[in-house]
Image 1 (spheres, rainbow, N blue to C red):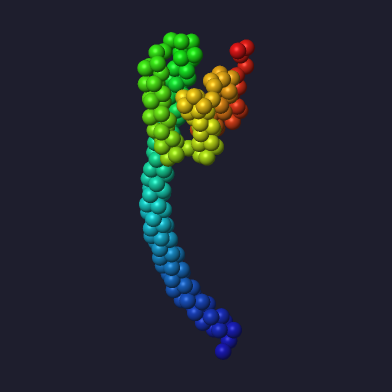
Image 2: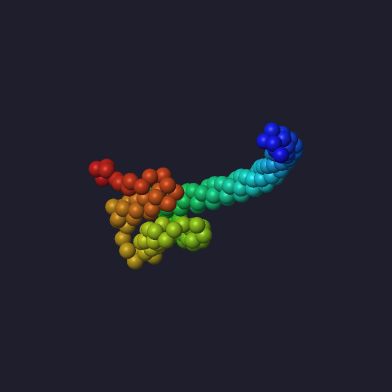
Length: 183
């Protein structure tokens, strides 16, 4: 066999295999792209569902946290309202502005609200707030039971201690508030 014939046979073989190879390559390339698109679409759909579920969970968590924070602030407002009322009554009693009957009613109202405050705070306040509240309420309770005398400076300091613990708990400010007045 001559080299020319061998070369023609070899070229014909390569061309016929190459044409089939090109067809196989084109089909496999198309099939690969098709499967890749299909897989990508499935993954995208699955990730979209997971993202939507995560967004829903996050929204629920946000709403729950906001509701809890608002409830906590409301309970703290009740604490401030009750303490300010009893302190105003103590001042009025010290100044002789309340009758004995009014003082008894004020003490009874304070006792009712003190117990209610404790329940509200026990549900949501950290121990630091509870300790400051206990310290103030114990002192006020001793005053109402006439086992201790009313000292405005001590009441103010205990009240500020409670307010600073509340402020820290609700995240208003970490820096303590202090009384800087002259009295």
